[in-house]
Amino acid sequence: MTATALPPSPPADPHSYAQGPALPHLRLSLTVDFAQRTLAGSATWLLAAPLPAATTLVLDTRDLRIERAEAFSSADDHTAAEAATALSYALSTPDPVLGQALRLELPAGTQTVRIAYSTRPEAAALQWLSPAQTAGEHPFLFTQSQAILARTWLPCPDSPGRRFTYEATVEVLGPERGQLLALMSAENSQSTAADGRYHFRQPQPVPAYLLALAVGRLDFAPLSKRAGIYAEPATLTRAVHEFTEVEHMITASEQLYGPYRWGKYDLLTLPTSFPFGGMENPCVTFVTPTIITGDRSLTSLVAHELAHSWSGNLVTNATWNDFWLNEGFTVYFERRIMEQLYGRAYADMLQVLGEADLRHTMEELGAGNPATHLRLHLAGRDPDDGLNDIAYEKGCLLLLAIEQLVGRPRLDSFITEYFARFAFQSMDTDRFAAYLTQVLLTPAEASQLNLPAWLDGPGLPPGAPVARSARFAAVDAALARLAAGTPPTDLQHITTEWSSQEWEHFLRGLPPTLTADDLSQLDVTFHFNASGNAELLAAWFPLTLRAGYTPADASLEKFLLHVGRRKFLVPLYRALLATPGGRERAQTIYRRARPNYHSVATSTLDELVGGEG
Ligand code: BES
Ligand code: ZN
Image 1 (spheres, protein in one colour):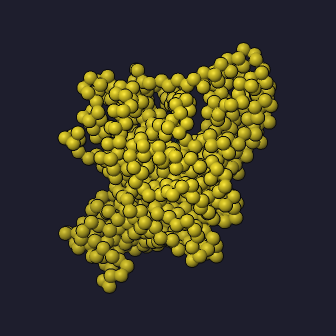
Image 2 (tube, rainbow, N blue to C red):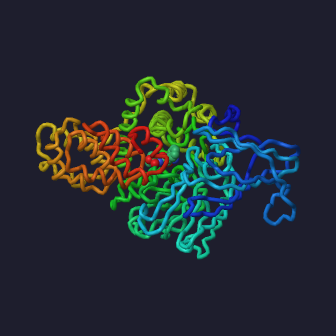
Image 3 (cartoon, helix red, strand yellow):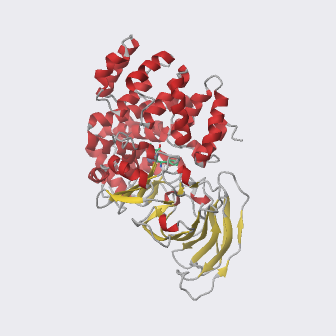
């Protein structure tokens, strides 16, 4: 088991300029200025030891205002009586995606490098919200660093293959400072500081994409000794009710794949403009409030972000080309957690829905498209454009294929050991393939699996697993009756116990040829327009748009003005654009909605919808 001979560590990350000595620790000191929409202060990088000789250090930056760079020959820049040595530095020509390399010439003896800087109001990682864009009456700030946006809020080695521990001092400025709580992907306080000053410590080494900060009028409610919720006061009670199962999820995860190694596991529910469903920031997962439905039907998303505490945050994709190692493992792990809590039939529904997403994405990308390979080739591209469902669902299917081949007991002990052995390290596709074949698979199993076809081949290899769901079979039967002319009201008694997943499968299974009249009957019976479930609404609106069922227009518009989650916005604007006169309608809505969207969403939608004025 220990005699594995893995290939050497991965080649350079095509999305980072960073070079030079290891930087094992970061000290961040920032003020948060809501009036100016800037973060200002310094990032201090500690080297492992004083440099034996003069060396060039290169960090990633994008849209930062660098004010000054200094070196110290001790590890402590706060109390040392020693004077700072001013450093000469240079910024390279800006690249729209990668930003600018910051080159610093470090003299021999340097142990600490301090860079004074500030961010720009339009920094891509930062979303500054006005009070009207929150659930309350105070401004809000949150960061989204993945994939390569950390460099827009601090100068750093912005590669998932580079880790560091960190501590931070954050001071909130302005008259409202005493009411705003600051949180980071670190040990957090549970109450607001009257002076607006917060200290953070992340004792575990993390890559830059897991750096996170949020500031807002937030309250905390504990769920268990190690789990809790931060939310705006107007959202907290509903969030606590929705997420009561979090401790059970953590316990189930530990039973599956080993100890949770990050101390606390809290959730922060963000304002609706959060561009993702969830983001696995260590110690505090950021989530969209659109998963708060009142019936706990979308909590697999929490299981997903929690699972990243192992797959991703402990063992991290070396570059964004290896993204499937983060997301494919996490989707597999997420469904194992859900199975543990709610049973196999529930997990099967999630798997079938995921496979439907995968088929859809593969059709869109087209057979033979290299974007359908697990190993990506994103050099020269914005990783934000290149990352899609393939890593998630094809990655999960690879693990299911291995499960079928070797059985759960063997796969589970392999995964547990994999997380333990490579904890706080990065992993790339070749090293993983070598490890898997050396440690888990017999030669016969390896040839049956055909790993090269999974990793570097298009679509799905023949014999890829296909999930079945007994509960969906009942939904399919209802769909068949509907297609044969049974009126929706006659199906009502079958549907009373349906979960959100069954409804999602139902909506996806409705024929695209339904007329506005058909949809009206369905709506009167099942109340889709009035649903509080964002997943269902997002599956319903494309049907109403195609059929011209106008009673849905107002709720679609409300949805687009309110929700910033890109996964919903892109297909909805596409469906809107495909209707007669749709471009003008889409642009009218987009012009109003755009101020509420994060740059991650607008950078995609500006291209799709246009007319942003
Ligand atoms: N880490 C991702 C979000 C992400 C990926 C942000 C790539 C930036 C670049 C997160 O874990 C995730 O996958 N979120 C999903 C939800 C999940 C249940 C599939 C999302 O936001 O939709
Ligand atoms: Zn994920």
